[in-house]
Amino acid sequence: MNVPAPIAMLAELTYRCPLSCPYCSNPLEMAARETELSTEDWVEVFEQAAALGVLQLHLSGGEPAARRDLVDLVAAARTAGLYTNLITSGLGLTQKRLAELDAAGLDHVQLSLQGTDADMADRIGGYEGGFKRKMQAAEWIVDAGFPLTLNVVVHRQNLHQLPQAIDMAVAMKARRIEVAMVQFHGWAMLNRGAMMPTRAQADEASRIVVEARARLEGQLVIDYVPADYHGDYPKRCMGGWGMSGLNITPDGKVLPCHAAQTIPTLSFDNVRETPLAEIWYHGDVFNAYRGEDWMQEPCKTCDRRKLDFGGCRCQAMAIVGDPAATDPTCIKSPMHGRLQQLAQELSADETAELVYRKSP
Ligand code: SF4
Image (cartoon, rainbow, N blue to C red; front, side, top):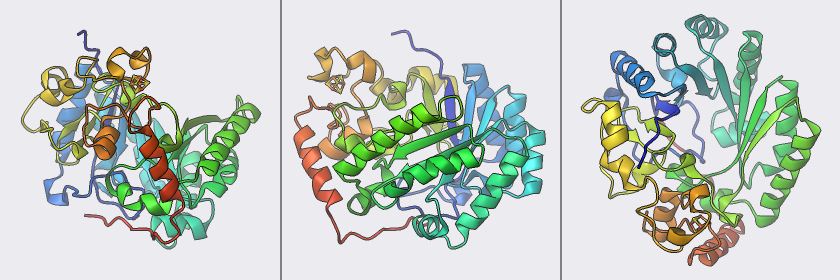
């Protein structure tokens, strides 16, 4: 098949993070600080990525501001010709550091929001005083002139704050808000009982987003990831496996998607040993679920297969136990009914408590 060049790369600079969000989708076993790629390693990766055709670089984590060399990394990415987006909790950013990031060429900031008030945000983030610091960082980000996107992960515990989150984005002069229903990958799987939204909440969230999009057209862009456990068709995960984006873990593994390490049959190449272009075009992992040849029925003959590429391989692994199975969020999957029943049971769980992530 004709494999396109990747457009976007997510560089997970570190798994270290001051927050302890229960919805964290990073793996249960996280790479320790000592194994993180060095500044020189990352600079080399950015140059290779640009040569490969990557246009957008998303600097993420953990908390990327935990890297002392963040300004140098942004400068190197800019020199390589990449558009840079910093995905941050805001903790670890000062006015001075933001000015340095601006001078280094940072293009955009995406700020996470755990709740719209200190009670909720600090409880979900597991960090007392975090909300106050985040609000201060938001002001500095806007004052520095960065285009701002707010990113809010919504779940059963904070969904009632969705209208306020959208209002906050407007008040903060954000250009965009990403409203993402919690995705149950990595650590978040431990919190399905405490965070699974009810069907009524999922429907209400969709209604709120539709209404806000119409009301705020031209003022605020609203991206929305609906609750897949309550949906009928899967999302087009990563734009298709190995078709438009790649992730680099803090220790240099190259993944087709953020959660791919949950598929135990895959063995990941590392940028320390293999050139990025070789991994993208010829690596076993990237070719494992690329295109359609790997598909089973009902995907194999489904007329939607070019739209969603059979959904999410990690979700198929997590629920069905087979990464080549149809994503069980699809109404045509034999496991769909079981998934919906599970979602209903989990969303009615009144005993589950939040299990907080711990930083490595
Ligand atoms: Fe998509 Fe497969 Fe479902 Fe068809 S059967 S809609 S290709 S997940």
